[in-house]
Image (cartoon, rainbow, N blue to C red; front, side):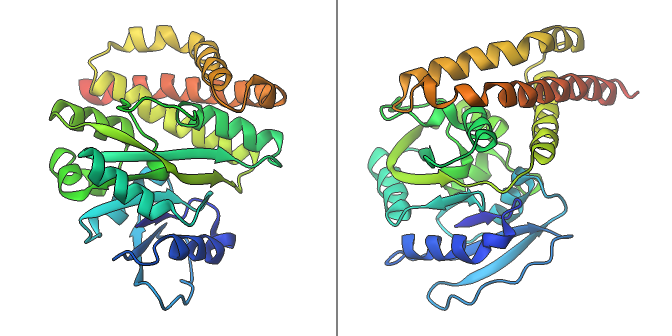
Length: 287
């Protein structure tokens, strides 16, 4: 079990306690992944082995990568301190991973009814694809924030995982190797973040930068093609999110007050994409 400490350190004990309850009766250990500049004190839980893994960055993919590289289990499950898992979480992930015979399964993402507009904006922006009550049986991608993978398959197909577990990259390589993903709808994780608007803008900008670089570096897009689409990105993504939420149990009405904040975060993502595309091209050309 890899827990990425991505800002919710003040609630670390409560998060770990929820994971411990979910892992009762399961042969498991908890690896708390954190950046080297973050001083944490592991809670005393006693019931399940608990240890830490350090990463040089506080980005969640870097934290997951450090945790996975140092893990020892047959299966690696991932989440962050921005989520609370339910008591049946671990068993549901393990059951579906085995029953479906897939390389990874993703659980269901949820947001509390009492969540404020910023929380909902961040949630719908990142997780609308994974919140439906009747998702595809064989999704193309799953959210790493609530997922489990067969470890030897993951590290075989994504050997650079120690430098960061970026889902888009990893899933592309795993699909190319013939692997499939599944759903574990009974494994529920509730989004309870502790980020300010400024922190979320930075987060979306940095992640957008990685995706812009990925398009040029891995997908073979030209710099100009990647730059040309960035002005449209916020509106295309917002349309997709509205459509996904409209098909879910939540309904579009639950997110309307969050749309202005979502646009702010989407423009930050688009700006990051542009920067990432330019940077990737410059590095590739030796500039």
